[in-house]
Image (cartoon, rainbow, N blue to C red):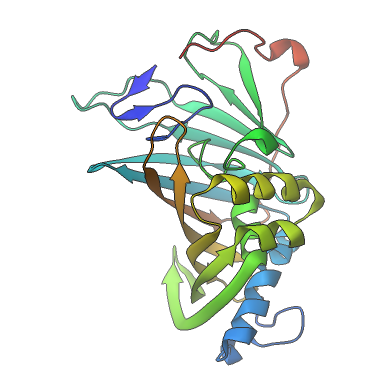
Length: 271
């Protein structure tokens, strides 16, 4: 399987490779100091846990050597169970036609499962990948950043600036810009999130991740955009990756069921 300039062998992608108040009572509107903003953003993942569920849209842009591609996804996520389902659409080939059906991804604690994986995998089988074993902790490889992992990166916020109010997808939000440290995020993450973030801290070209994030009036992440520098095992140069996650329709019904063991492909995946 191939998609233009993007090699999909190996994992799924070797891609070119505070509420109005934060937990400590700091009002978002009063986030004039960097310290206040840091505390607000570190608490943002807990607001998603309180929300329970949401719909999600994702976009991942990759660039290297003058080539740029975008992979898009959409689906639902249960923050308390750490379960999600995304339909991921691969970019068209240079001729303008798609070479693969959309891939269904199931996001689970410690695992990424994919259907319509291609590369020799039967159409009715799933591929399971251990996210702790990925060099990026599944922040990049799946073609979409796990929505809760995207939020948990904010636990590693080490500097942030409040840029004011704006609107995202019809919701009034507060815009913050900052940097997060992957190792610190792993230290502060939930039990299920530690191992993938530790893997990412070791596998990325730099452990410091710039971001822009937009929180609604209840402190929930509505949109977050991270800029990663990822070293693909098949390339010497780092790949620039911009991952955007949009969250909306909080409280929506989410029913994600993991496949049975007999439905998971155990054979060799073609390169």
